[in-house]
Image (cartoon, rainbow, N blue to C red; front, side):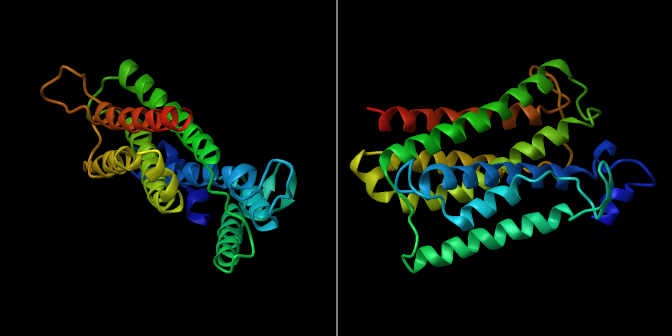
Length: 243
């Protein structure tokens, strides 16, 4: 955190050409975890909308949605603060505590079809927003290897898909009975396969070339293709659940 605040010789890490890639990846993972935590609080971790919210999940949601840049000391407001990593560690501890209690059948995980429908719909909307960010960068900037901001979009999307790959793989087991009853197992396997294929794309340097170019690759467009493929499959899952 201290090194992040200092930057590279005073330059913000997010302004560097390549040294911000790990941060972009982590932001993508964090986005997936945030969305899932919110859904656990609102639907998956409750029997119904009027039931009590689990305290561990409530604590996790409050901590994981904290901003990403708070350090030990700030100017607005002036004075010492609790840094962001402490909040994220608290969120992780709260989620683990909920999982431990779930293993002992002390809390609820409501694996209903309507909850799965809403969860899938929210994920589809989330990655749909990411696809629009990729589209905007890909259409308006075609500098190839020299587009030093394209890698931010790429690694954010990569991190987001990485997070959702783990989450949706786990959800496959949690909602196995519903997937089998609705005949959704092959389609869900397709979602996981598309996510896995997207995660196999790991170029050393991200190029944002023209779609019809032959010298500079179009890594950003390729990632956008996989994002849309995943979203398309999720929308199809949602439509089957909504019948």
